[in-house]
Length: 169
Image (cartoon, rainbow, N blue to C red; front, top):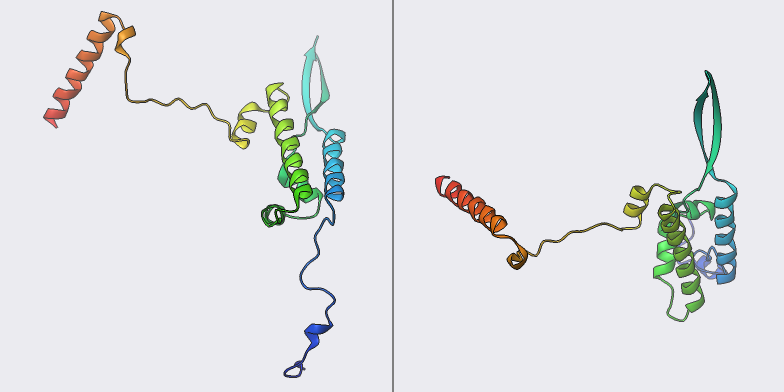
């Protein structure tokens, strides 16, 4: 059965929309710290085999678990979209929430960076994750003042050959 036309049931609602997952910045920070501690308390394990005098033994070694925003959100029972939207829609007066979110992102970034720098995490994976790359940009200008005559002659020969090949095509 449908609701009657021109009803005013909506006025009976005590509130509109969903409540914030975290009512205060302190609660958000405490929950993030629980996740950080969980990462420390639950390392990943690598099993390695060793052979000594014909006897093979296996040992497990604890390895650092990289903190991620994705895993934090899973731990907090929200998704990354919720977290990013929450961050983007904070009013300018919500400085405490902004500070806590910046601190959370900084802890995650620094843990990954320092773990990779200490060779506790895979540096290639972490550098891509953090957006760190080695870029070599060529300006298109060649400083010939520091080159020997032989180097200059080789460049001139190569350019001449390239020019001749371009004419043929």
